[in-house]
Image (cartoon, rainbow, N blue to C red; front, side, top):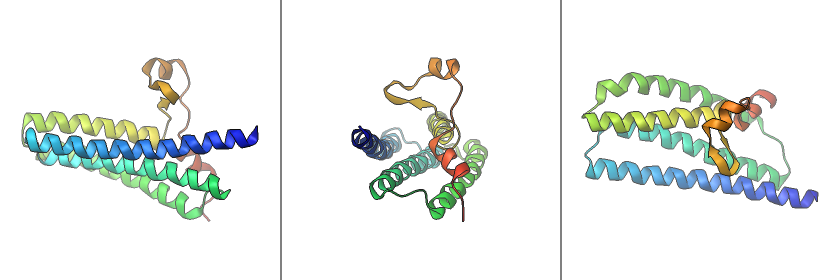
Amino acid sequence: MKNTLMKKIKKQLLYLAIAEFAALLTFVYVWWVFSTFLNTRTVSLMTFSYLIFILLQGSIYWLYRYILIIKKRNFGATAVGLFTFLSYLNIIVLVCAGILIPVFKSSTLDLIIGIAAFLFGVIEYINYYWYRLSYGKSGFNIKRLTDTKLKKSSIRKMIIVAPLS
C-alpha cells in the first residue's frame, strides 16, 4: 500500500514538473506569435517574461520535490533560501512591471495582451507562493475556491516549516 502511494506521488510530482515546463514553452511560443504577427512589443515581452519566469520556478519546485522523494530526503536549507528569495524577488518584479506597463505600451493591443499575461502571472505567483488556487483535475475552479477555505501553497508550507540553517 505504502509503495503504491509513493509511486502515485512520484508520478504526480513528475507530471507537475513536466506540465509546468510545457506551459512555459507554450507561453514562449504564444509570445513569439503575438510579437511576430500582432506586432506587440515591450509590454508583452516584459509580462510574458515574468509569467515564464514564474512557470519556470514552479517546474523547478515540482522537479525538486520529485528528486527529494526519489532520494528520500527533506528540504535543504539552500532550496528553502532560494524559494524565499524568489518569493520576495517576484513581488519586486510584479510592482515594477505594474508601474512600467502603462509607460512602455507600444499600442492598445500590446497593453491588452500585456495586462492579460501580467494578471495570469499574478495568479500563478499567488498559486505557487501563497495559496493553492488549482485543485487536481478540476484545475482553477472559482466555485470550489469560494466554497472552501484557501489552503497554503506547497512552496509557502516549505518556506514556513523548513529551517533555513
